[in-house]
Image (tube, rainbow, N blue to C red; front, side):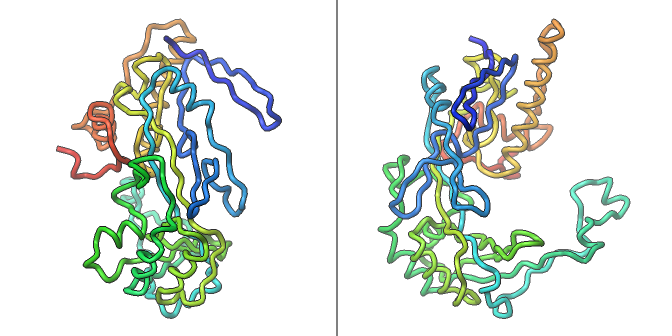
Length: 327
């Protein structure tokens, strides 16, 4: 079988056929996505930023993948509540300032001593730190019966091991009496604060109790409650090292649909899938023979380790790349 294109549904409900020699699917959390807040469940891929509205899930695409016998599973992820920074007692929270001078990722910028523009403009944002305590942990466990019941893992949900919810942290490490929470302003022109480390899809009133049990957050207000999203993914063993599917030529997958979690992991796959799809489509349009595949080896880069792990071993939980995974 070979891909012919995609059928998309516009906002007005009409469908449009887009023909293409190569297609890259990057559905993120939208593939038959279900949002969860307490025991409330509703269809969606995510909430729109700064809005109560929900972006709808991709159900038809999941059904099409199932029709062509792609092996599908369920994974979940979560996001913490967003706080009103004007209601936080910043003086009670230790500052976590940015590093000056900053070290750029680029070796060229490092060589020339370049600094990000925000440093030159003196517009750096300072994050702060709070932490959970015994009272927080009592609330987390007291209200565990209000957490969602998931489709995966007999209701427990299959979430990322390395950035767990506050419930999972308290449950897994009962000997710990505190977990860090980093208060991260979301931008230069907003009062919204992201409490890193505090995801947990309790009902909103319970989330507020948990947040207010922490130092500096005694009078905080929630702008938007945190929630979980559960979604379909394709077993990546059904892909080649170019991220093209084995069963349908010209169809490539990248990102969370391959079972990964994390921005960098998704970006890495997008580079490989996009490069191979573009090269293949271009060659076909010119009538040239198929190009040599763009593959990063395990011995050449962490992208190679990531993709080789996925397509040869698959994954039973959201996969995150670590340097320790490389030989």
